[in-house]
Length: 227
Image (cartoon, rainbow, N blue to C red; front, side):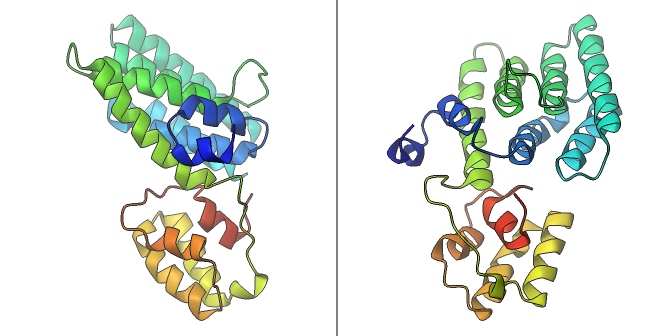
């Protein structure tokens, strides 16, 4: 993949394949989680919600591998129950969560690509008969926005000057990440600029009113020192 192809952003599958061995496991899992969070309405019961939360916590090393394995089993059980009930959309949504809870050691697939693909299938299954293709295409566009937020432009890595991480900047950034208060990002941009940040890529990303933001946001991760 070339930088021009990446910037054009028209081939999600190719972009994810490019990232498979280049991006961290944390980033790829958080992308999988973000895709699954868009299916929240389709989850049948609390099992998938809790399993997905566990997958996200595991990405940040907040829960153990045993807890992740338990979440994987819960998502698998939810998938089976939905299939037995004839709930195709719910089964696909649960299976996407199952992919997001995978330990990430299976060489046959990547959790980011698998979760994204199955999530689109869930949305298509939910759609009114005949509208599945359009629904899947719309979901593909939404997933591209998630990918852009989490991975940025891997061909042009950005470096953060440690002097920008003042106590104000660090406190704001941690609060935004922990509480998912991404609407506060423009304020973080102002604090960064006050600290001497002159990186337009970071500042513009935080101030873009049309940008999608989730945990794993490339610019927020840089400020927080996360990989």
